[in-house]
Length: 100
Image (cartoon, rainbow, N blue to C red; front, side, top):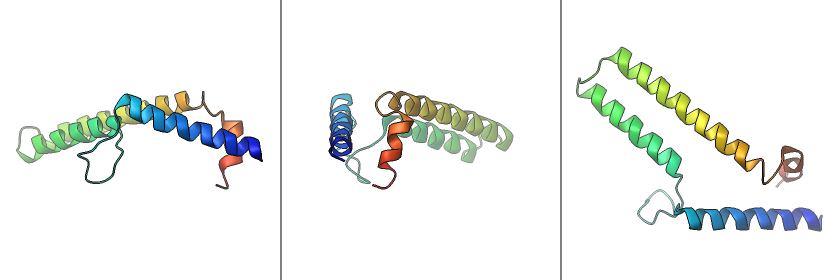
């Protein structure tokens, strides 16, 4: 049981350190203290695309196609990040954290 707690503490320290080093602390973010830069970039692109559609710069078919492409690209990035996190905590060890 002590090893699980130690592993949990190490993972938390790695995450906090990673957020600090990568500059993910968003002091101007009113929704929370930490933000996800990948999601922010995705959301900004999605907002811009929606704005183009609402201003009549693109039609609905093009808006939907580009939105679907953007969603697929973001999903791919999320999958890649989750795979890289498996390096730190392989899925067989993650079962220990299911009840936390």
